[in-house]
Image 1 (cartoon, rainbow, N blue to C red):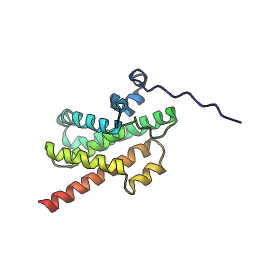
Image 2: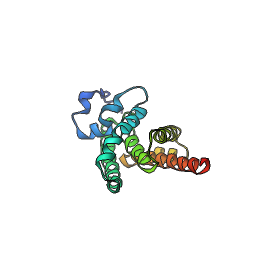
Image 3: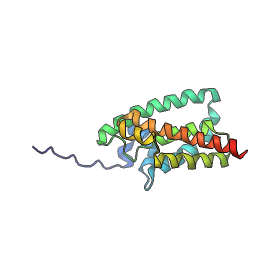
Image 4: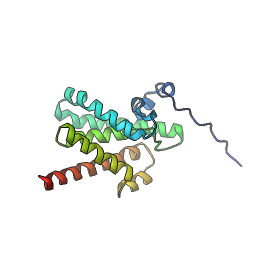
Length: 167
């Protein structure tokens, strides 16, 4: 017996704004931009970082990041189930939260942030172990968020090592 295929959902701005979970998962619309929606989502996160980090006391940023992670796990899980694709390429909240973590942990300044951006995108795209393992293994909202957090830690680690070795 053949199961009927669902018609693909047209991913439009109007579709996205109808539910909070879609708006969050698709990074306020940055995930609708082609090509490379993950890069667009990361760029939006970078643009939002300055006003957000200026408005929130440094001690509260970690709490905010944990809340953003939990919100993303819920939103990405819900939208992934709705689309029938656990980690749809247009869902970029995971990149946004992970890059905010990078920006929070590396020293300030535009040049440092640009290096953090490049390192994070590199690890997020290449998915070296265990990032690729988590990406393949956990097909739910938590998994969508977690592999990008690991990519963020790799970026921070390489940045710290380069800073230590390079002076």
